[in-house]
Length: 342
Image (cartoon, rainbow, N blue to C red):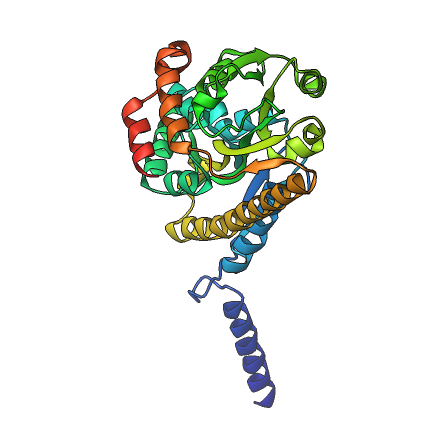
């Protein structure tokens, strides 16, 4: 009898083990799900603010999702060239990329106006528009036309005027009359020179320093870090903070990938991107502020408050009347709404 009881006890324990391990009658099967992975590629180098933002996005998304989502970050063109990454996100062989108005305009032409002179009058104007309802309308158009979804706009930097001693300070577009302003040799860039009130003088970037030194050109425009790195401050007298082109890039995701995420996962992505945007924007704004003081220390006159409204009004007139070939695809009603959002 004892032997029979021992056998029954052993069988009972064995059956319990089987049931605990997922026997068909237990109803206790536990499914272990793999984390959702996002792969993000960029050609930016490690010290760029928007590369650092990618790392912030990775850490924040993995933290708030409790490991339910993972991000693989590839910078410096490790996976794709700039052109290749844009195409890969459209195909769905890459999840995320930094895109911008210039890339998207190849398939949705009107967005080229977002990179024109005085579409935005400064950082606050750009980020309030592009990270608000108007930006969302534009991004929805991008989804329909391109198949990728921009998730916001990160700040890259702002182009400013930089002039040699022309015998006067420049505060209005009328002050730019006759100023030989270097531009790259393309219709959009020549239109930019006209929109600033200057006399566009096309030349390659490598010629600009000597042109400023000799007077072949009176001025050029670039973000402040470029002015420093190219040492234009050695042969110029003025930095005019016109804020005439505000550079932005759009962290974007393949639309099918986006739709495959749950509502909760989409919310996590947006929360993580907001933290990344803050890092990118604050880093670039701080760098520009420091450079203003650097140029002052080098003896340049920094004009902080030119009449930006006058420049913006002139720019619109110029694009419509002097460069219609460049502006013919623009949505002027949308342009007016953007201007009203200043």
